[in-house]
Image 1 (cartoon, one colour):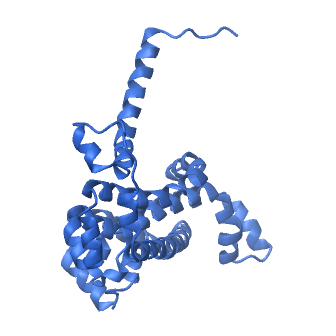
Image 2 (image 1 turned 180 degrees about the vertical axis):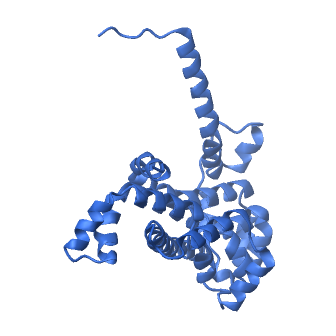
Image 3 (image 1 turned 90 degrees about the vertical axis):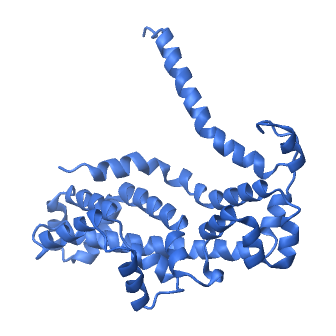
Amino acid sequence: MRQHRRSWADYAVNSLLMMLALLTVLPFYNVFITSFADPAEVAKQQFYLIPTSFTLDSYKTLLDGSYVGRALANSLIVTLAGTFVNMLVTTCGAYALSKKGMPGRTVMMAGIVFTMLFSGGLIPYYLTIKNLHLINSYGAMIFPVAASTFFLIVMINQFRSIPPSLEESAKMDGANDIYILFRIVIPITKPTMAAITLFYAVARWNEWYNAMLFMTDTKKHPMQLFLRNMLADVTRMARDDMGATMMSQMTQTYPDGLKMASVIVTMVPIMLVYPFLQKYFSAGVTLGAVKE
């Protein structure tokens, strides 16, 4: 087979793509090296791109104490429980709404789509959560976002693509709807389920807004809210939540290095999940988004 000769346009496009990739990776690289930076060495360079020193002081200060471990545990609880609730509500709701003979289906779909365009506002939202007695509970970060309208519609379209004859044959063998859903439909839609699960997990791991609104107890703050407060004011965070000992340590630590170390600690857990579910992205979301 004759090999294709590369033209100057191919090299130009490849070079442009490499430059764009470099620009994308550069911020992450800067965050990483700054988290290990010595403030004295950073001050000597106008643009700190080539590390000349290595120190773990920022990580030692960040991980010294129970506040980080507690925040990580809170984020882990919200991520695991929230993702389970998300997938349970989305899967069961999408399976029911995918049936054309379901009573009231049109009205329900109209109400669901309506939420994509309009909301009740912040004050009614807060009063609703308060009346449900979810203030200062993990439920305030889980139940208000129990389902995403977009992912629900994607899942509905995915379930509609399954041949009706498959479910009819299962019902002839005595299977009910719950058995069909969990033993037949879900295994068939595994790529879509895996992709949506990952998106839900990332959203729950990055949860901070509902925590900021409804969690007055700092012991229940997730990692993202802790990171937000630190990025806003490291000194205030140290004084309010970490104690006098941590305050004295922070004054001796590079502030930007401490912030970047917080970013790294927050990013690593969720990034470890991506390699295992990445293969389902194109096969999952694309397949579920195409309506026949």
